[in-house]
Length: 199
Image (cartoon, rainbow, N blue to C red; front, side, top):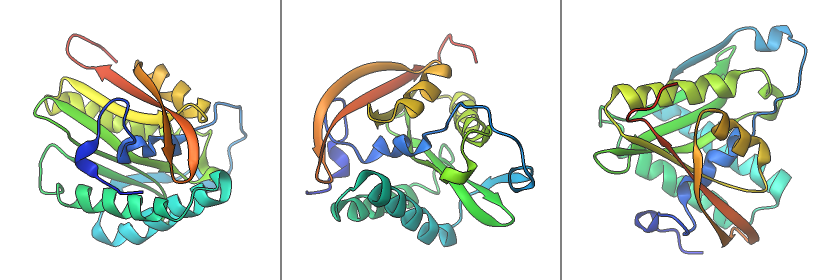
């Protein structure tokens, strides 16, 4: 599959659909020390290896994505790192004991629209509020930076991710069948309108 970031848009396969990796569970889970001190910090270039490895490992193991997925993750990070100097961007890493366990990237798509990409949380750390913290941080930042809309794309095979976005007020604006990474899936494009809205 040819990876082409400029082709992003409703109804097209997106590099930005990595929001599916959020997949935060809403089941009641007992707290333990492993989750009591999750810190959120800014993304650094040295985190790239972990972001790539974690996404590729998860999607190959649990969704059997083919080898083109690794190329797409790399291309997405190339795009994002090219926008790191943009003050409107916000790239975050969640870590436990100085070990990355999650990530989320917010960058400008237009002067008024921002997009969430590469939203991922290690499976062992889901269902404990960390995903909500990451998503809340970038939505708040998008509002403060003057964006009018936040976009994110996922697949309907990830209902937990869909519920998370919807709990923040995101609305599905389009769905389309998509063949990507060797799989037939249905892509769901979400938007959150910030102008006149309230969190």
